[in-house]
Image (tube, rainbow, N blue to C red; front, side):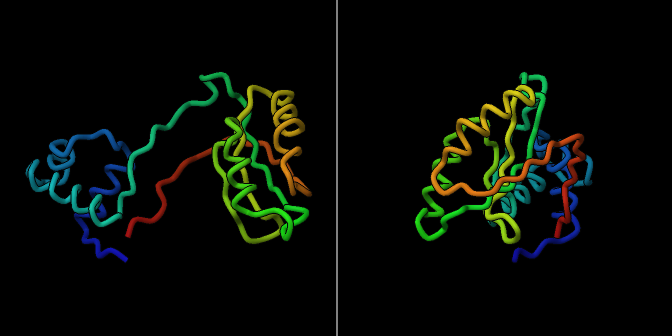
Amino acid sequence: MIALDTTDRLILRELVRDATQPASTIGRKLGLSQPAAWRRIRRLYDSGAIKGQRLDLDHERLGFGVTVFLGVKLATKGRVSLDDFERAVSAIPEVQTVEHILGLYDYRLRVVARDISDFERVLRRRIMTLPGVGDVEANVLLSEERRPGPIG
């Protein structure tokens, strides 16, 4: 675990809000000089508290208006390597995330598609044909509110 002080937490909140902010802007907001803010940000990266920056695409504007969370239970865990399943499902471009989970299903996938019929095509032709796939459950995303989660 990384020890964070109040200033570190405030910096993280600013970066979660907008990771493109320069250190000078963050420093100005928090009463720090640009070099002091930059050193703290660099320390947060070096310590592993910040793993990187991601580009957040608007899938709907890019023509992918449907997001589905798909629970996948493997039918034959002993015969199919989890690594093989993860590698195969990760190669499907519409699959945005692959999460190995504990519970009713073995995996939770986030799948984007142009519309429901496109999702059905991806499900039938790509996902259901993967070796070892047993039961699946689809949940269509209606709306989403993203939150930064706890910081420190």
